[in-house]
Amino acid sequence: MSIIKNKPFYYSHYFKFSYFFALMLLLSACQHIQQSQSLSEGQISASESQKIDHLLMLINQRLEVAVVVAKAKWHSGAAIDDPLREASILNAVAAQARATSDLDSVFVRGFFQDQFDAGKIIQQHLISGWRQNPPSTPFDVPDLARDVRPVLDQLNPQLITALQDSRPLLKNPRVQAILAEHAQIFIHADAEIRQQVIQKALQTLLSNPA
Image (cartoon, rainbow, N blue to C red; front, side, top):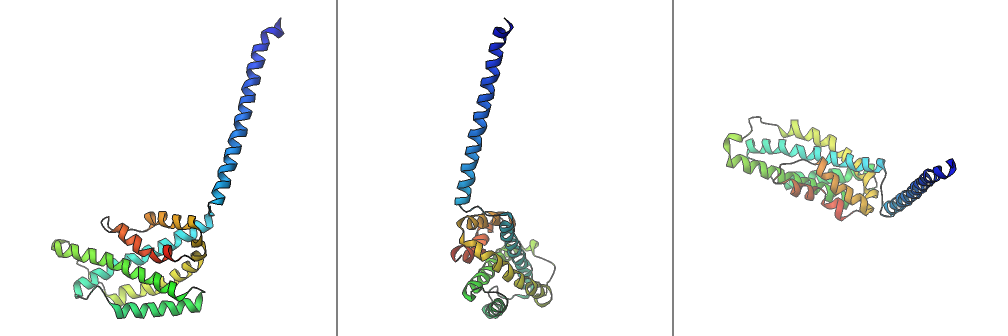
């Protein structure tokens, strides 16, 4: 009699256990499929992601220098465009890249030209704003030779090294997507120009990854 009474209880637990076991198998299979899909789509490792983030942080540090340059040029009246200075820097970084890496000179020049152009977007935006709103003009007067060039001289070799580490990864479309996504986190500028700055700064990286 006790056995008959316990049958519903026994079967109830049996089916619950069977259902739970089947569910676990299904979840495990789904997870395996998702992992396989991620790998086939080019999932990258944490160390590779860190290399991309490090490159973006250096790009942002270089773009921050554009604010100091804009202040100096505002007070001096110098033109935003300085082709001779840009050409000198491009020659220097291309030579440095040849000596310290196997990066292609065309790629290096293209990347640093992008940084010049992105920086000039920031400079033009700031100077235009100061012209329209004179009370907002900066009081500090930076010196380019003292306050800017030593910073760039330190950043440029770091950028070359970061490019050397990151460029092979950019052949992976997933890495290109992560570069564009993480740029929204690491690259800062005023809201009105931020997307334009990001697009310009990453132009060579995304258009010439091989």
